[in-house]
Image: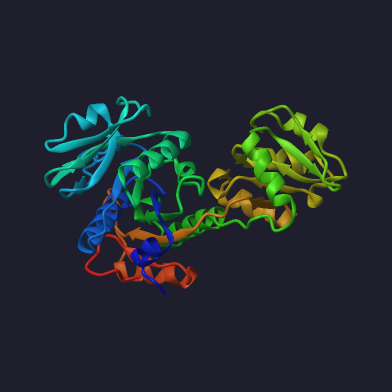
Length: 346
């Protein structure tokens, strides 16, 4: 099996690093990726969804690792943070906005720790990737943020690295269970028939729609399924095959369909990708047992999983046991302990 770094280099131009929760070791993982790219002589750019790189976590007030960048690295961050950098060459002042001012793309001129605050929308990230191309960047890293996994969508990134750890739960089996659930949601299968292109176009159009058995389409005139269960149900009938959602899929909508729609076993719910699905583990298992079918138009590629056996709450797991337990359940994805990074032990 290829290592995480080999997977990343071979399969990605843009990679997102996403944490299951705060203190899951995501920033340590980012620094490890940076160190590997530097040692291999691969140039790259880095940005963050929201704020990152602070010496203390602004949510938990715990010490957190900063992002260390070497001379020559290209960054994208909001103007307020950009102005704090000791040595940097401005490459492009963009019209992409953030909470800390317009995003500026620059090249670091001396080794240093930095704070990053990049675009907070999919559109902003896509525009930033275009700017990267203009300044000659071949590879870029998106440092993800808590509860913003949707910005790791295949629309933006070619693959993701998922960071998880002891902070998720005190019980090692529950950490693995919750992580496996997230992995499964991210890797839900793509539609495999002629409706794929139609579903893609409907999602791009941005309205909830129903594709009938005969290929005809009902567009419902609503942009989100949130609080629209009654309208969706009133348009479903025995000939409905796909319910296409341009936004997120929540468990509450599926519960509404199960309680009121007798032909739900003939219905396939379609979303853009697995980052748009927000269903807890117990509900998801219940939906599967009832025969609910969910598909995506773009499948998320998980490049690797990083695990952190230490929790800031003071407890920890044995590193070897933690990695071994994960590998017993996930055999086709490289896994590494971010707190034991001498080698890529995936």
